Image (cartoon, rainbow, N blue to C red; front, side, top):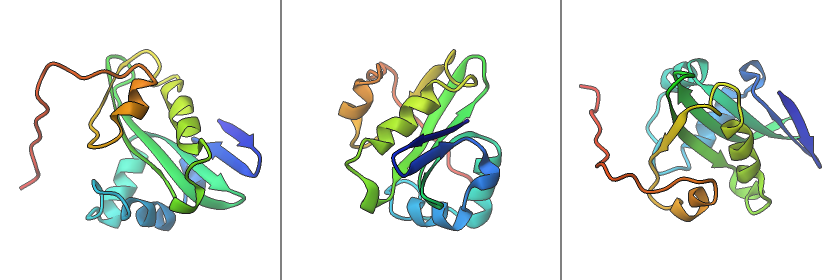
Length: 136
């Protein structure tokens, strides 16, 4: 996938991604500040991703971990501060949710502060409690 809007482009071709830019983006979030380069690289290679570019500079990422049949975990939706407020995060989200590997699955996400945004895309609170196991 290669889409353009004004001076922005979206792609799911991870070979075009700038891992240094992605690491810098993730370091600005509350959920991924401590990820190593190796973790970021592995996660990109094993996920469906959409990269946002302003001209040739990567300024956004949306990532989905999916089994392509039943479930997808939506994660790492982030846009560089200088490019927020232009609907670019929504654009990435819409394209990722329509991706052939994602569109037919139940999509799960965990967010501390963006519930209102995700409700616009049909997400709702789940009755079960979210749990996590951290690596040892």
